[in-house]
Image (cartoon, rainbow over the protein chains, first blue to last red):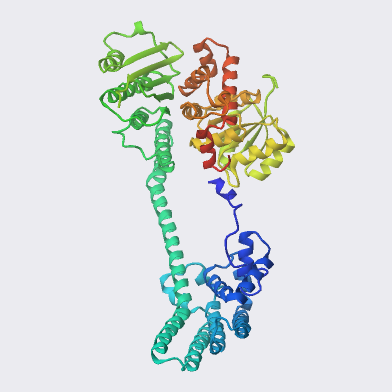
Length: 410
Length: 215
């Protein structure tokens, strides 16, 4: 509905910012999300990095997990894409190397022989991650046949980038293994296994991550198009059919009105999802059903207003529905006006129905006593079931039938 | 404004067909001083042409009738609005009323009835369709829990009686005859219900409003 256009004054999403980024825009994105100055976040990352190395890890994780902001950024970057990735890779490698070297004299966290391998690995990961983020196949949920392209990327530089990135990571691992032969055999075995697993994770993790993203995008898109198809099918079965019938019967205004009314009623029910508690169960639904039937058979419009919510049908209320239907039919037949009002009010102890038209009206005495419609099918019927019918009519001002039925205490 | 002069009317609806239909149905009873099919031009033109009554469609892109009503009333509080809609979903209806419309009718209304409704709104009275009267009765049905303002949060029994008749399909004149009161009194009751509808904080109303994010 129209209101959705307005709901956009929300908190910024947590994304990586393309504008004003230093490395990958993580700090800028976090700062915007939290609504604080970007420098503060950057300083926090650097301090964390120097104190424990946690800053680097957090940054890398955020880099992988956070989506780009999806303004025009993806498009704007496309022309310089190749160059950017290399710079990015080198920058990350340099940062890692720098941090590790910085930490070394302090004697914390990284053993000496890790510095070079870590830098190599980080550079490789950066290349793999930088792979093709602006690629439309990645952003827009590619079809199944496009999955390979999603994983490897497109364009001339893509494959080279992936290969070189992988080589960097593998040589990082190799360098680490080569320098760590002082470890005793068992630990070495375990560490090697862990390192290889970690390396594989670094290489394939981002791919799998993005693959999952692409798949869920695709799934969303499929659900949307299924909804569209369902709606199209519904409109075709209902509205378009009715419009076709209306065109064919254009010279019979009464039929056209009836068709239009019926379609309106049906479409309204569908749109507003008043899932009708099957006409057999609820008083309001049963009365709407009776109204629709009378509209269809007698070519009048019945305006239904309901107050007071649901009311489960019982035997007496079923009598009320029948009497009401009779009143509607009388109004449609004898009033000579195109509109009849039906008002239902449900209260805890009773249900009241008013059927009113502004038509011809009648004098009670003037109606031949053998016309049993009113006396029998409305008044007698209501009385026998324990209810009451009051009929008010005056010639030329119309008729109103008031039906009251007590409700059985639930 | 007096009942003799023809009210100046402005139409806002994004359906061209509907606008020309209304134009021809209204005929000579009113003077149409302009029309618009979009929200922003409508806001601007209404400010320039100073109509007595704006007929505004509830559903339009870019904020709908509700935004037209709020924006215009902020600067021209004496313009009166009558909302028109094909839908009678309660949240739609309640939200335009709470935005400041003085009446609501469905698009199936006949030409003469619409003219009468416009005249009524132009004179500062309120116009309720049977459907709207039904909603209001529903919304004010329960006795409010912890009502902050009993005067605003409840209907008097007379107001209830009047609304019930509107829901049953009675015109103001018919209600006056039925209840042995003057038409003016009926109008007063309905205006007072409109005021409660716009100002009450009953949660049924705020909930409907919240569903349309207007509160």
